[in-house]
Length: 325
Image 1 (cartoon, rainbow, N blue to C red):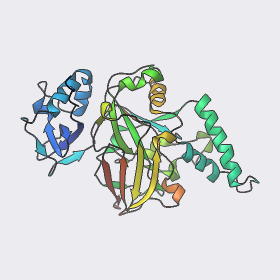
Image 2 (cartoon, rainbow, N blue to C red; image 1 turned 90 degrees about the vertical axis):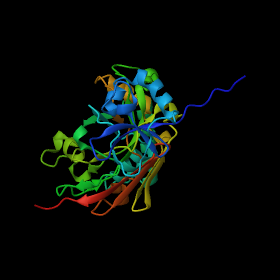
Image 3 (tube, rainbow, N blue to C red; image 1 turned 60 degrees about the vertical axis):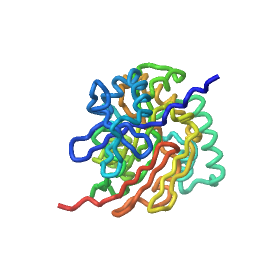
Image 4 (cartoon, rainbow, N blue to C red; image 1 turned 120 degrees about the vertical axis):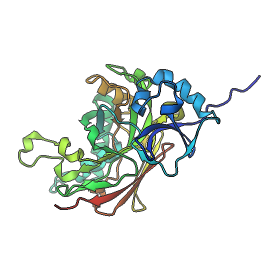
């Protein structure tokens, strides 16, 4: 009996050379311009995701077609793989990260030992995973930048911090879908570094207002995305991926998605019960332990962040202080 050939592994990206950006099919270190290779001439990865169900077979065929006009990635600029209509963000979604926060923020005069605080926090996380709901908010598409672009640190951000996150990219509209159905609506996965100005997370002018995610997270370039969108068929288990962020070569975050309190499916499902998720929307699923505020080392001019997630490539960005007027 003949053995069926395995599909050629591919990814999607957005590239530019001398002209405007184009959607590219990535196989190894080669790129195929999909605006010319696909008969319906999509101008962007978003346009491909708008027709994701029919596009997948065509993409699989092109990935295995050696007669196409493949280009080397050398000399091409890599942009964020998709320009989403909506950016959904999830916070406090890694068990060890939240436990660390509980311990770090206990009252200084507390009689509770660190070990007791960790035990208490662990019990809270078990209950939260069982009984509670994900913590979700929205970001701005204008904060997204490419995976190798410099990140400008605004002069008003005194404590800029990193947050490596797994991102689910929506492939077909999702509204009020169950957790069991949610991953059917995910086209694939990519990497985000969801930068945060820690000093601006909580309002100081009126504490009752609470958090201010708008200002803390949405400066231009505060969400490096990519390098590529890897289709879900090539990610065997999104809940068994390793996230690693290195700052100037030193490992700061190193955790598995197994540590998530709410898995990808539950986060996507929860978001869809309020919003209608659209093709190309990105759902950031939270950041593990090891943020700068934990290490007592925030971002500064000249820092280089290198972020990897199993099978999704490498993102590398350099921090640049904003020029003073």
